[in-house]
Length: 388
Image 1 (cartoon, rainbow, N blue to C red):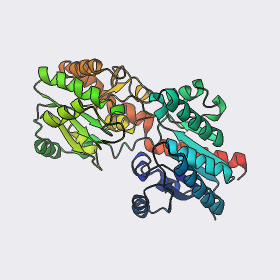
Image 2: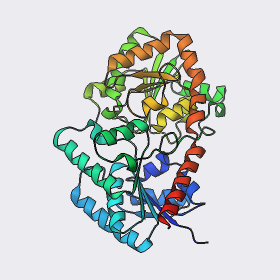
Image 3: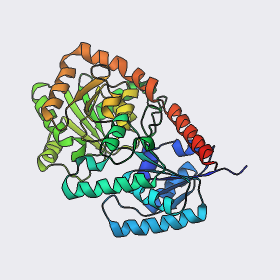
Image 4: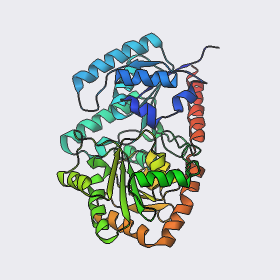
């Protein structure tokens, strides 16, 4: 029996590889799936590894109208040829390019997942442009999936979309969390002890870990400022930073970079394909981001049994419940980060309570298989409604 065609589009392949890990492979049992993204060689390697077909369309992460028009034209021709039943986009640039091309090509089901909005931090003329882009993306889509309830409320309140066009899949998140893969039981005391020794972390050290891109929008300036003050009063605290250091888009302050390089209690290990060993040797996640959709990192840390310190922003404040599995702090506030760190270091009863709840609260709400099943059911319902 011939299967319906499903096209999934992201701006860069890394989003397919990490943010949607496993999801396209799961959908291959039900659809003829093709992945579209930029970065031709990386996309080709990913397709070979995951065993699904790919198609390259170059896209940028910045405002580049001429390049975007070229991308729309190329994608339009591909969609007219392939005639997919569903096109589903993720990330802002892939959203506008993919939804516009899909509408022009007459694709019957056009879906866009909203997972964090750059416009939340934009002001002035740039904010107006980004608002217009989001409105156009949503208007071209037949259905929009915000990946958190707060994000859904935001785009409705900002009049970017009507209420009946926005829907959350499952309990939120773009991909859920594989709690069998992210499990502290997979790492022995010996493994953890060896990695700690390699990183010059003693058994008595309390490790705060950050996982993600090292950019200003992730709250890294405030995090390092807070840790610098914690470091003065606690001789057993370490800050472990795991992720890309981006020096072009949204770079860190010079004083932040200086502290990062000079403080021996700040350990920077760069990007790691497997972040689980670093969660396994840590005591708590520190994630003071300015904006998110539904952050995988917070779910991953929770599944690994770590309580989290997170900003009071959408996604984060839905995964974390205050004083149940973590602490919620104001955005852009280094004093609040320092105070939360201090509480976890000084209050063993609170810390142990948060840690005891962390994994169970993730497993019960965000198990990956349940979200995939819910998305598949949504696809099937939409196909039935459209009589495709």
